[in-house]
Image 1 (cartoon, rainbow, N blue to C red):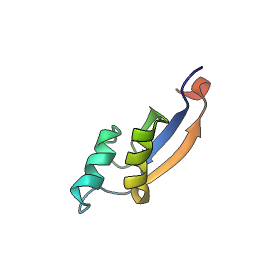
Image 2: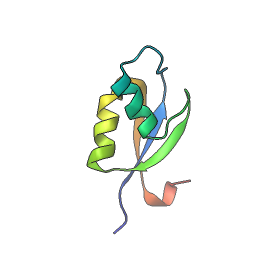
Image 3: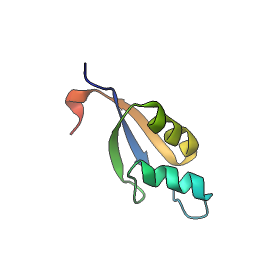
Image 4: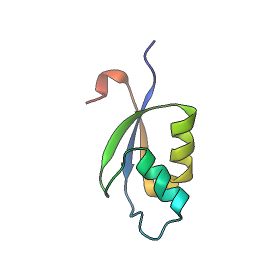
Length: 67
């Protein structure tokens, strides 16, 4: 069975955010506003998404739609 995926987009700036929030966004692989990454839907990734949720747009992706 393939892992579930989520598509995460940074929609607001990391400037002025607490270090743990900015590090969570960077840990997901997000670098700049508008940058989108597809990551596995694991508890650790969900925790990072929850930490920076006010800066992110998140949507579920099927493995076939990865690219």
